[in-house]
Length: 342
Image (cartoon, rainbow, N blue to C red; front, top):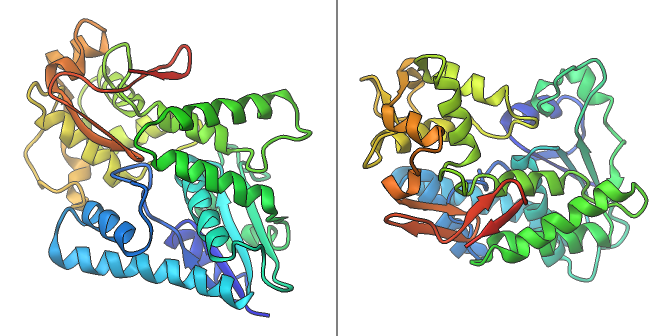
C-alpha cells in the first residue's frame, strides 16, 4: 500500500525522504500570521496566497498553486485509502499545521478511514541527547530513522478535536478558542489518563493567544521580547531574532516573520525601534545585518509608561480575528488570567 508522509517544511522533508518509503509532502503555511478566515478550497488558497505573497502577482500565483497542490495530494491519498503518517513537533507552527491537516483528512473521509488504511501521528517534544529540542529539522538521518513506526494511530478523537480547534481558530470571535485552550490545558495538567489526544495543543494555543496585544502595554509577546532584548543595546536583526528565540520555550517563528514584526514597529506612527539603512525587504538575506535600536517611545512602552496601541493603533490578523483600530484593539491578552478581554 502507498504511504504519504506529511511534515512541517523542506528541511525535515529532505531528511525524511532518506528514511521512509512513499511520497513526502509539506504543510508549511505560516498559519500563526495573517488572515485565516472560515473558508475552504480555492477561496482559502486565494486568501492565504495574497497574504504570503505580499500581493506580488508572480509570487501569488505560484503560492496559490502550491497550496492547492499540497491539499489535493493529501485529499487524494485519503480518497484512495493510502496509509498516511504525520511527522510534526510540539510548537505553535506545527500544532496549527496538525489541526488543519487532520481537519482536511476528516472532511475528505467523513465516514472514517477508508478500508485498511493506517493513519498515524509522530509528534515529539524532545529527543534523546538533545538538550534543547527545537524541531525535526535538527535531527540527522539516523536520528529521524529511529522514529519510524513510533506514531500513535489517528483515531476519531484526533479528527474531532482538530475539527473543533481549527474552526475555533478561524472564527471571527476568539472566545471559543480561549475556552478550548483552557479546557485542554486543564485536562493536560489534571491527568495523563484521558488527556487530550493532541497533548501539545493547549500550550501552543495559549502561546498563540499571547501574540494578541497585552493589556499591560499593547505589545505582543514577541514584540515584548524584542524590545526587552534591545535594552542591552542595538543589535543586528539576525542577532535579535536569535536572542528572542532563545527566550521561547518552544520556538515557532521564522526569521522573515520576525523581521516583518520589526518593520511594523519601525514604521509605526510613533516608532518603537529604528532600523539602520539597508535592504528594505525582510526577505532579503542582507536584512539580517541591519542594526536595530530601541527608541525612547519603545522604552516608555516597555516600561508601561505608554501604550503601543494608543500611540500606533493596530491592523493585524490573529487567526480569523481582524484586530483593527486607530488607537486600540477589540481584544487584548491578559497574561495573568490567561484570557482575552475586550
